[in-house]
Image: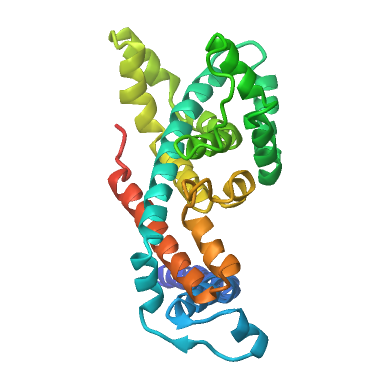
Length: 316
């Protein structure tokens, strides 16, 4: 009985410190988490909440100068934006831009990732060189592409002139409302594809070679292996990469403002551009805040819908 009692005591002795250690770990984790929550509330939620509040006010530059609060006007800012036909076209342009760029970015990035993941000579060198566009500041990227598109001496003018056998001598992409958004999309793709390709290359490392070899032995061709093995194993990486691309292009402001300023004829006036124009060109901060609120809600809805449609599935 003494031996059993001693064993029981030893179990209690061992169990005590383990419980205390778990409690200490929880307290330590809470101590680390609390400052993070405070920082998140202060630097993220408070500015967002402030912007939403101002979207329901007549809040202009004179309010800041005179240090007087804005006048509450309910939904008047939103009504004016809809009635003067500014908001809906900007929403449409934003969705077209984001959808086109993200889809093209994924297709081209995946193609580049598959090439870099192969036994291509100099693949490592290509990986390091191809990151140059991503490193270049966005404003500099915009200026580079403005020079390329320049209608008098730009590179694109000469390329179009050569391939059209001299029939098209003046091709001004950014000056044409029908092609301006496409020109910006190409510049955005040039800058963003390298990072997308690099992320997808890391995702390709998660695809087991044994499964690919087994599928090859079973007679699966390259297309079947790609859609039934590669894509399912890369699903989590693809979701993160695509979500990052959606957010990046929703908030795309410097590139568009540098290249076109929202023109010509508002053909590139996305929600980012409209928000800036309303707040700092028209000096109506309340109206700009209203655009920002719609912009933020639309981005959240699109990201949530994307993650819901492409929810994780277990790969057997």
